[in-house]
Image (tube, rainbow, N blue to C red):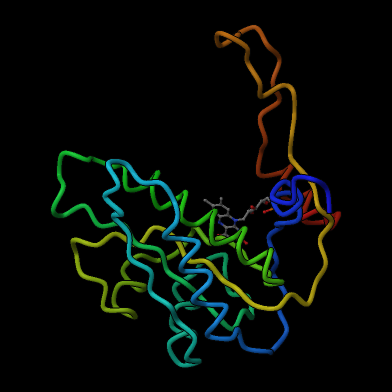
Length: 190
Ligand SMILES: Cc1cc2nc3c(=O)[nH]c(=O)nc-3n(C[C@H](O)[C@H](O)[C@H](O)COP(=O)(O)O)c2cc1C
């Protein structure tokens, strides 16, 4: 551990897509939720809801809704945004929920859990599986479990993404493509 353990945890968090059968203990789930709700939110509105799914029959329905997330994780937490009482806040719930999600991923890493953020899902299927009302917006599914796969700590740091003082339109930047994603998958990087 370095003098800055949070930095080690940040680098150690990788998307995990293979899990052990072992269930995630309730005590750890509570820790994940406490970490999530320690996140900052605009005007401290806390415009989030977390649907914890660990019953196999409900989990199956969540995985059915997940397009690129049919992994064998024993736990899913569906993160939803609520802005029905605060229309002036616009879409800031997305930023708030994003911060909450990252807190959960990092807490999970610290607790020895693997995780993967699932952004692609059939919204209607997820709503009907979990009784999510129209004025609550499911933002993502986070799958958790004890990892059955190891991933090297890393950062995707590239100097090409950094601008100092102003945006430099002349700065060369090779933006990532789906082919690059496929190459990373084929080579086992992700
Ligand atoms: C908004 C968002 C949506 C994502 N959706 C998916 C997904 O649907 N399926 C999946 O397997 N991974 C998904 N991921 C995980 C990314 O593929 C992963 O974070 C990226 O390849 C970098 O790898 P790393 O998380 O191991 O650093 C998503 C990540 C984010 C932030």
